Amino acid sequence: MSRVLVFILLTVTAWGAAAQDQPPQWPLDLDSRFLTGNFMEPRGGRFHSGLDLKTNSRTGYAVVAVRDGWISRVKLASGGYGKAIYLRGDDGLTYVYGHLDRLADGLREHVRILQDRRGSYDLDLAFEPGAWPVARGEVLALSGQSATSGPHLHFEVRAADGSPLDPQAHGFAVDDTIAPEILAVRAVTAFGGEGAPTLRWGDGETPLSGRLPDLQLPSGQVRFAARIVERSDRLRYRLGAWRVRLYVDDHEVFASRNDQLRWGRNRQQRLEYLRTPLGQERWLWRDHRVTLDGRSSFDGFSQADLPPGRHRLRLVAEDRAGNRSEVRWEVDVVPQLGDLADPGWPAVGFVYPEPWLVEPAGPAPTEGVCADSEPPIHWRRGEPMTPVPLRWLQLAGLEPLTAAVHFRPSGPTLLDPVAVTWPHLAVADLPAAGDPTVAVYRLGDDEWEYETDLRESLAFDLDRPGVHAVLRDVAAPVIATVTVDTLLTRLPERRRHGIAMPRWPVIRIPVGDHGSGIDWDSLSVKLSGGTLVVEPDPPRDRILVELPDALPPGRHVLVVDVADRAGHRCRADLPVYLRAGPGP
Image (cartoon, rainbow, N blue to C red; front, side):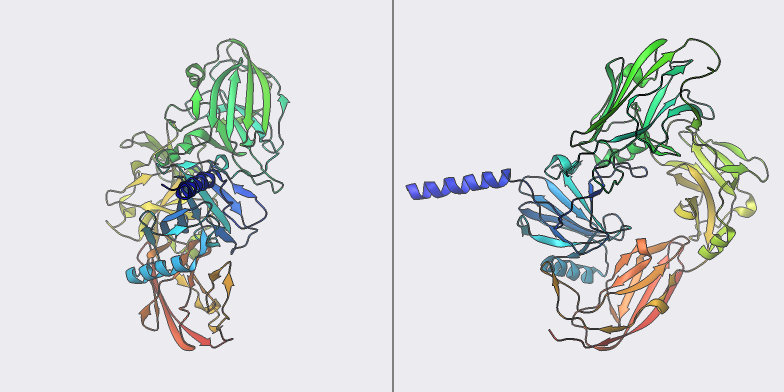
């Protein structure tokens, strides 16, 4: 082998090694780096699996490849991550970009051909290794808001086994000099029965620090929780702390750090957080069902048993940048009966199980236990304490078939769905077997939300405790074509970050259903007789119609046909008038 060839091989090898050592590129072409969500931040019964990067409440920023590699997957859906790209880096990690707007030209055309062939917007496309190579810094797409409530980029780093990793530990850290805030500490002093009395120090808004007042308890049966919020920048979005530790008498009795999330364990968020009027509070003990990585606890304290005497407690919260906050307090366990005159912290009511949200009403029985459920589920029938006005139900096209029922577990937090039979339905209230218009709804903050089908045996899967009702959907969806601008002028050729933009303005057609909700799989759009695949936009109750660039000026007709989950259909014919604009 010649010296020249040896030199070339050594140079290429050294360059490849240097490229691997090169830090990844930031995924968003934007000077500011603000987080609106971080890794394993609690999100309503699940953990957040990546970072949410702020895009100034706008769409259209360049989203770039963070490393050399190849696109391994493209997924488009009306829910989840919306438009998403999966990049397999040469380092063996996978990088996920979610809620995108417009894909790069070649990739978009490839996707469009497959969508047209299948006649469906939803697409889950896998590529063979190296079939779609990309280079570090190459523009993959424009940032957007697909399948989410507002513009941002969802970004993940995944290990070789597909489990999400904290991006801030893998080259995507943000500047952060702000320590996590410990806003409240709660002592839950008894368990079982109708509730657990609690004592709390802190209002949930003002950060605590240093020494807290001493706490006196008549029993060592106590569990602690804390309201902890991380903020990484001046915009002060509420994030989750990276590591939390609790010490009793200088022994670490509980520790939690968020480095890796395994998908099958995501629902365990319900076991780690307590919902209170202050918001989400972090339990400072480990439920025996928690198998998440980075969790540890001292077995004695996991049983929540402090022996009589005086104990020193210390709570430490840290973020990924190393900023930390700490509070300390002492607990005096007094072996005496009865309530203490002054325990040191204010009493603030009860937690777990949640208080009943319905008032008993109607014919007996109004309370009971679903005997066929495991674990046992308690129920109470009556009127919701914060009812949705009848007028709202009428506007949503929903008719109540049963009184509201509050379901809640009688034991530990419900982790997985439980099969429940609807309790004590009167014969007159029984819906027809298999009637698609009848379903179980759950009362949200201010409306009844479709939850699940009611099976012929009057059984359903209870996923979350709360107030439920059996409702009938009697109204069809609405397609509000009167608000749509149908006179469109051809746009000049434009490119944004190298990506070609549509030549016709995108038509935004309101499509909504406040009853059972739109069945997006039923959506059909015809353009002058031919099928046109369009993008659903459920968070904004609309569809986005991008007309073919080659469509000639003149009159065309869009026919939109869609059904709700109850099977009610709606159709609208929308004439569209296209006129020529500037030339190429």
